[in-house]
Image (cartoon, rainbow, N blue to C red; front, side, top):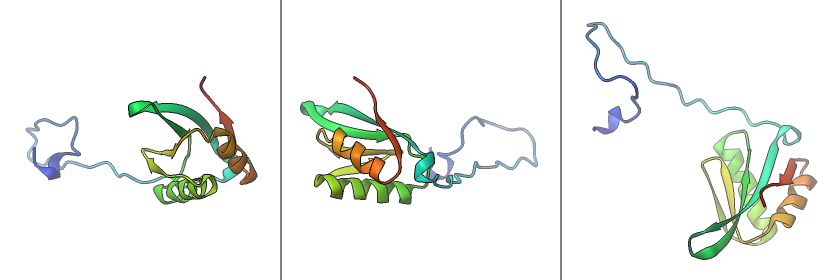
Length: 113
C-alpha cells in the first residue's frame, strides 16, 4: 500500500463518480489543568526483568506531555521516555513521582499491585 493511503480505513471501493475521501483530522486536545488530570502510576517489568514506572491518564498535547516527562526525569535523576500518551521512567520511583506530582498540583495515585 502506498504511503498516502495508509490512513484510509473502511473504504475499499466506491462506484460514485463524485466521491471525495474525507480524512479524519488528528486534532490534539487542549491540555487540562493539573488539578483536573487523573494520573495513575504503575510499576511494570520490561524485557530482561527491568523495572519501569509508568504514568498514564495524561490528557493534553504531546508537547505538554514531553515537558512533564522531562520534569519527572530530572526530579528522579534517571532516564525515560514519553510515547503513546504515557511517561516511562526507568526504575521503581513511584513514591518520588507521586510526591513530585502532588507538589505540582496533579491528582495522582499509585495503581496496580
